[in-house]
Image 1 (tube, rainbow, N blue to C red):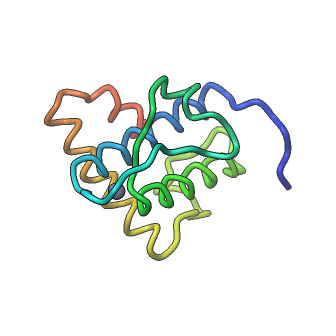
Image 2 (cartoon, rainbow, N blue to C red):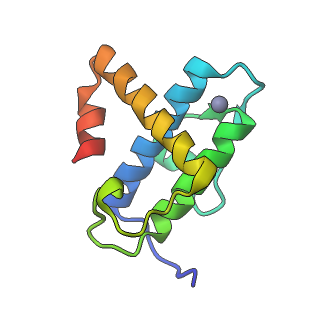
Length: 121
Ligand SMILES: [Zn+2]
């Protein structure tokens, strides 16, 4: 049931946060060859204002995360860990947890608590 609609401000914020977390994680942990990330449902460049390069694994994870975020049936969206739906399964679930933990710590260390606050709210 792919319905055509504009992406809301809240969704854009969430997308930006998700992209940021995966980007930091990949940059700091992966040396595999990276390619510019693109997403078929909307133009990442419009949201991020710059190119985001990711390794193939992280591209897959981010694509999954963005797809799930846009499919979220809740409005307003609850915090994912408090949600009964649990979009992330198996491999993706452990991976996204690792990404959130790593990039969350990274942001604290680099004074980007504003991003973190946004994610946790
Ligand atoms: Zn990566």
